[in-house]
Every structure is written in C-alpha cells, then in structure tokens.
Image (cartoon, rainbow, N blue to C red; front, side, top):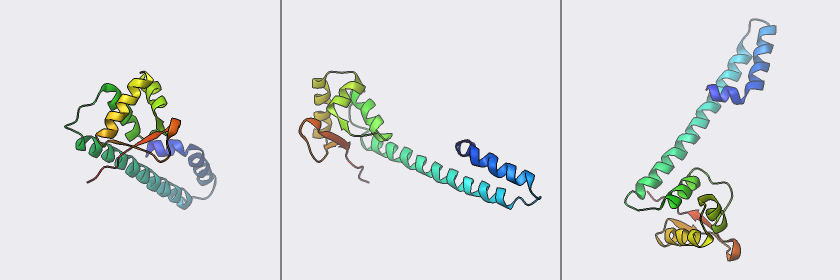
Length: 133
C-alpha cells in the first residue's frame, strides 16, 4: 500500500489538503484511499501472477541443465523482457559471441523451451514456449 501511495503521491496530497481545508467530512479522502487500496491489491495480484508463472516455468524445467547465459536470458524473459529477443541482443546481454548466442538459442529451440517468432531473416526473434499445465 505504501508503494501505491508513493506512486500516487500528488493525488494523495491533493485529496488530503482538500479534506483538511474543508469541513469535517472525510468521505472524499476515504473514497480515494479505498480506491488506492484497490489499485494496490490489483498491482500485488499482477506481481504474484508473474512470480507464480516464473516458478511454474522453472519447475517444469527442473531436470534440465542450462548454461549461466541461458539461465540469465530465460530469467530476463520470464521477468518481462522488453522488445524482441534476437541473437544480437542475446550476445550483448550475455556478453558472448554471436556464434555462442546462436548455439545457446538453437539448443533451447531444440529442447522446446524457445520458439522462433513469425518472420525471420536477419532479425529472427524468439519467445518462451507457453507453460503447459
């Protein structure tokens, strides 16, 4: 809740000031506070869903062996990698050569962990295969 109030700090102070300068009626402040609580709860739910999806992903792959590079990139992807993952981005993030990035990706594609996205060519991108329950 405190992080939600911090995110909405401006509105918090505005409603608080209006309440303090007005009558003793705190209805507006209570309405704002309860709506803020709702948004905080919804945000916590979203975070929890992401954590559980990541846990489910890694549980499904618990018997698999990964290089440190593969584990690092898969964790980034589970955490909501921004944009499309290409071999060039892999090489840059993992601090490895383009050839090593290709080998890492090819290995994960062959094991059914990553899939090629539509399109292709020089800008082929990859996504995590959806976790099947």
